[in-house]
Length: 249
Image (cartoon, rainbow, N blue to C red; front, side):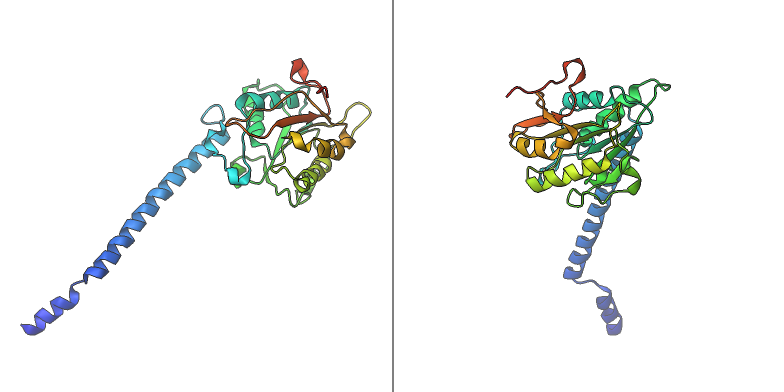
């Protein structure tokens, strides 16, 4: 009988072991719940990207200020998209560099257009892999400005860029990307270029984009959550329907 009691004692778990097991199961349940949330979010983003949820929205992509992410207001994004699409044909490519809110606006406008309306191709160059849910996404790191798929070189008729940082290095490397992407000008057409960045970058921008005849416009882009820095829009064409003209110094 004593031997039986000894065997029973060996089978009993110590309080510390029980506590460790409880902690393990609690953590496992927590991970499973978190995974379920992430899976649901991924499915929502996928549905938004594929248009299943109707109009696309930037709301599914939370801004990360540490990554210098500041989305444009819906109105501003749509103004840029409308100007980039004006007169665009199906044999054109519109490149969006580090400005995903404009890309989403472009997608919405094209989705709203009649099925038989000619639609240009889009490409989104972006550092945030969350936008990989869009087939037009191309991973982009401004620090490696020419590390891009070779088939994009010299193919883009319309380009908008928003360098993520207000530094000469970031502005210069983004300008290299824009120049690399741009389709060579012809006698009848030159690439349309729009650049959005801080007012204090004006001198650098006008120097870097002199090749495109970029000038400072009188349009001030708005951001969805506001921005303390004064932001300018630079372009090499005047906006249609009064969207923007040239800024008077």
